[in-house]
Length: 231
Length: 231
Image 1 (cartoon, rainbow over the protein chains, first blue to last red):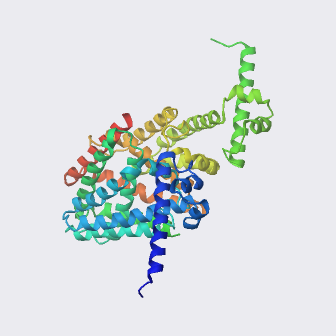
Image 2: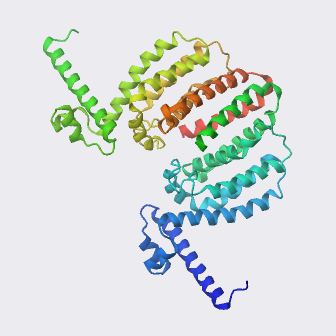
Image 3: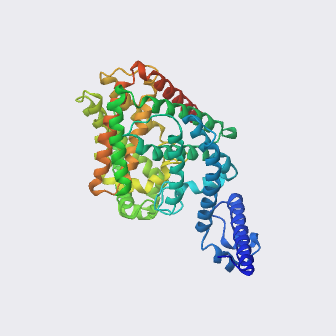
């Protein structure tokens, strides 16, 4: 169906207003912190009435969720782009991490203010919440693609758990980065390089017969933790 | 020097009052939560004047710290006792974990109320804080003893990091247990058993030549993280 000109114009204007409110909110969150910012301030900053701000976003949390979704979509395009050019597992995983860190760099302090919610899966803004599951799933697909596109043969008993483990590893790195006080977060870069090297070496060795008892215990442990998540 | 009878009596009475205030505080913390409890309530519960409560403990935080210290001393005796009887690394590590979980069991919800502070090393009540360093050190000694008393030959490059890693592993288990909602925390028990088996297998394999590249990368990573802690 081809929309009438009027509808298109209305939608475009609504989209522009929505985007302006979101941009204003992120500016305020970065400047004053999430907890301190009020919807009224966001509306003023965006040059809209308070009612209008609430029409587009029912709460500050909805604004953060919109940021997550917007970020997820934008990063997804970039990740697919870079994965198309990267071959080895190391460079494929690095491609995903690079996109994340580059994208999140201007929002490091803002994400830091939210990280208190991270550990509680009942908080909608937690990366572990039901509300962010669709964003997590998209991320899991990227890690799955990173594994599949590399020519590394991962043992079949371990394979189903790897995207989730890599996702958790990435979350750990991001949390470390958020509270990294070293100049220009050089510590995070070191940790990223060394942990990536360790990960890739570990996965290369995972298929060796000597490591079978260790791998079986890891898989057994992962099964237990997964049950917990689904309980 | 033998104290006079008068001094002994005074000290004993002071010790008794102090202990009564601490017991009252823990009761209130368990019942009402740490944040909700006031010093006035604690004083009333202990049957002492508010000024007297403040004479012994300058804040609620000081009470929690006294609980940590008391617990640490009591558990330390029990741990040494059980380590004297346990031989293999598996049973020696299990001995430490058993004492912790048995001791903390009545305080699970209270510890849960404090766990929000756990992630911030600047919070004095965090197990990672400077203020709890002496308690951490005692724990590290137990893990050191658990390793040394077992007949497992750990590679020398990895050995210096193991007590700290085991301590972190134990903290992870305790945090998992605090938020474990399965009946009687059976999930924690499963996780403990499987992760212990994995740990011991991993340490047994750590000396194999095939695993040298992996181990070197682990040690390299640990060095980076340790630097971070000491920066």
